[in-house]
Image 1 (tube, helix red, strand yellow):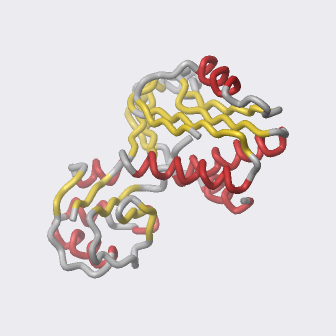
Image 2 (spheres, rainbow over the protein chains, first blue to last red; image 1 turned 180 degrees about the horizontal axis):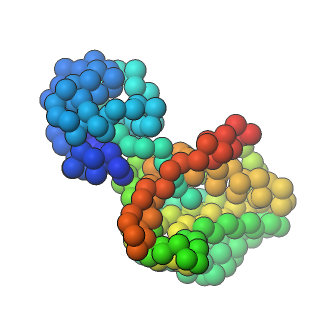
Image 3 (cartoon, rainbow over the protein chains, first blue to last red; image 1 turned 45 degrees about the vertical axis):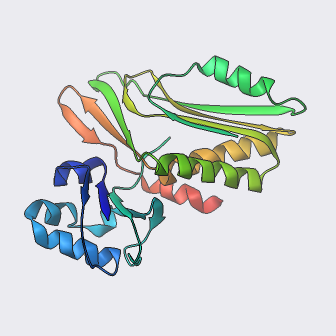
Length: 81
Length: 147
């Protein structure tokens, strides 16, 4: 699946988008996998209350299933308007 | 209904006039415009707005459709810019048309409340002494509860 990062999450991880082959069952499982990769991921995902997630471009929750999902995005709370 | 996500500036006067012209039979047009604040002494040089292409357009369309479902509206317009904006530049606008002003005002407030916290935009303030992401405010999230 494609994993996208926006705003300070993108800056902390150092890239806007990457392709990840994962068997993670849920968003939370994917986060655990990413955290274990490198310090920059652990830093970006240190506090999940500071993050929001979209699954296939729909705002979602960290317990959302990833079966059949093409795109997951992580970002801070939105500041539109 | 029209939703536009664009980097280019827009002509506020022309947009509002064009919107009102297209709303024959409506008695009320309300518009709101967001502008990059110019705080004297802040050293703010620019506002950088990032967004999530694809999701942004879908989220704005959904918010506008929800407003149309809740209030009796003739039309809705949402324009939101992204990219690098200078203080004083127009960031975004919403306009609503209705037969009566209450629907137009309430729907415009609803659009703004949801745009703030449910449309995937992120703002970064670029100042002389550094850059900082604008944090979401608790009161913006709380504002959704009234709807």
